[in-house]
Length: 207
Image 1 (cartoon, rainbow, N blue to C red):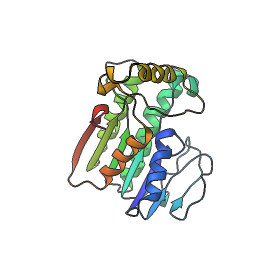
Image 2: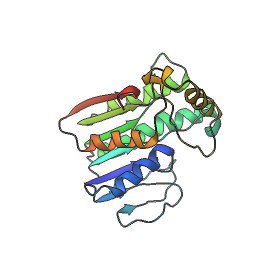
Image 3: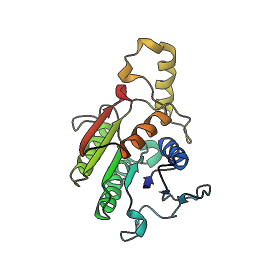
């Protein structure tokens, strides 16, 4: 089994990478990044500029793609740049993988993704819509709530939400409780080995 991971330097992507490298069912992991990852016998790490993705690279061909790309408006620098990463880049990566014959895509989206939502939630929904149109035989969309991770650089709004969640604990409905990167990663990897075809959506309370 050969797995392609995009977004391997983020909190969720790092968890996917670690679990995939430790999984004996996966023989090779391809993780294109801007900066080099620690070497591993199973890892191929193409270094590239994500503004100029190589459309004909052989490493696009894999048994599955896990996309954990994501940023914030503050980190991206503008609403337009945020959309360019969280929607346009996600769709472009999925398009190139599908063109290379990849049959399975797992996309890390967001709780509340909706075309009627705010910019963040609308962008996530548009990314879902875009990858759905590419016709992957098997598509898994994961919609986690707040991600319980240490961020670099920090995300103040997410940090405040996590602090409130810790204070209120079980009083918060399960749907809105924070989810760890390891939990999200495990769900996306499990989908790689699941039987059947079609689309599945995992909401936060199902993780």
